[in-house]
Length: 263
Image (cartoon, helix red, strand yellow):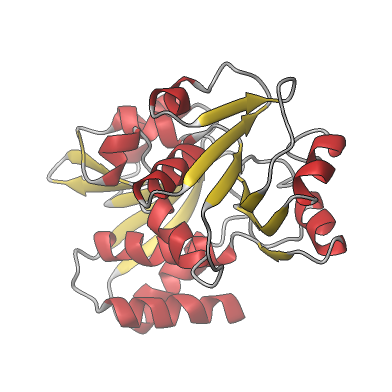
């Protein structure tokens, strides 16, 4: 039986085991999926091999460490330096990124998106910013400080920190930080968040399974908003096809993964 896992800190909240195990169980694929709480991202590779894993997903805050842990990186992940899915191919770790396409799946009902503000500058922000840029969508980044903005500046995106923030209109605002995951924080000072929400049409949060303080404010302003559930589903389906090496139909994977959300 093959063993898969999700690495993160925190990770106890993750729905990924329910999603993937639902697929394995109902489609009679001999595999099991579990959680691994990892404090030190530099230990990811040795932990992966010590557990005898066939593959893994990686969540906050280890996606850039996962890139470094791989022997080879393919597709979109190679462009952005961020990995959220790892496959063991004959003892070599192969890295992929399914976050970006998963997010595009999640927001497909949002119409006429031409200008996006992404809050945060971590691995998820890199994936989404690069994916939006591929579609010729204008992207701006807002982060607490300037220290993590070099990547975004290199690909010619507009970058701001809390001190340099200026009011502008955005069709979509996305929170990619962990603010609100296990606390009641906003992803930026409230005055900035209030101003942002006054000047947008759609709001999304990468965090799933709860109404974060950020989304609560959006809801109170009658904005159309989404949490990260659909993003989780989209990236999960793509990751599972990699885990099973395309031996299961993607339509079946999506069906049983969607069913896991009803539990």
